[in-house]
Image (tube, rainbow, N blue to C red):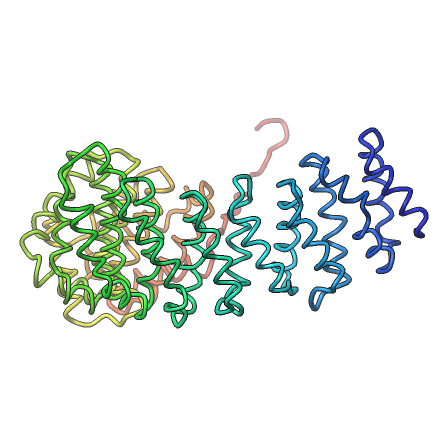
Length: 489
């Protein structure tokens, strides 16, 4: 295709009646387009007239035409012509064209091609404030592209300037910045103006805004620098005063869940620091473990599981919350039996966290003793009949939850012994009758059986059966041969 043919196509592309045919023709001829012709196309005024008037389907086709070629011609970084194209898109008066430019920048970033700092700044300035924007695409592009240029004054000025818009836009900025700070906590001081704006929004009388901001600020707890910042501004106390200690109102259910998760996240991420300095926060979680409000109860279960996920959390709960843990564990079987299926999985996951060996941490004798005591308090038995009953449930999500619980329990020596004490559990686990119902369940069951087959405490005949299952594979099928006798005899 030469320049004159391209110009003809571009003119027809700008005309509504000939647009679709011209777009299809352009895509069909794309393999013959060289880089000079392609760059001429990107500079065409007719192309921008088309982009301003095209519908969503036509934009999708155009993105294939333009951005596939961009990745072909500029695999190692942007050239000035594609940069100018992005700039014209991102500064266009129509939001749909800005969106088209954002889509192209995302395609380049996804394929590890470079976009310029100017393009990133234009995305901040023109796309962050847009109401009609692909939010996930926007955030992903900025989170990947901002760190190398985050400290640049022009970038910081652009981020701060966008804070003048409404709360939805401000929360986008907070999320981008807090996500960058998770990866680069050394930037904490540079991000102060944005964080101060977030804290100001947290004090406003808008429960939905407060809830969103608190959830975003929770990301800061993932690093020591972020944790120190949160402590330095006394946010742990402020959260209690503003969201936990308040009288029950119609709005409390919007903010209280995120307040509890804020504390639980701190206990999960920085257990040694948080539980030592703020032990009373765990009481707030236990206060919500009542059937009066099923939604808040489910949140409290989630949070208790987060606190008890680490070795430090287990030891803290055992030493400092012994009576409340005992009451919780004794009531658990009855609550699990009576609750709806919507909450059952979450409740089982809470117990799984409490029974776990502390994630990547090594399982020491003290943690093993604590988990055994908790399990025996909960079931009043030395077998896994409760887990076996859950495994019999036909619903895949509950069956998967029961397998995860089993996997956590048999990490402990006492769990392996209890498994062996449970009549028929091995046979039910090895049955392949339901393996075809859910691939993920079947695969995870195989992983659990493989773990059990390596347990030294089990009897040889049990491990032999388990190893035979493992050797056959997760999706083994027995062959059934039928003989047909002629004449029906």
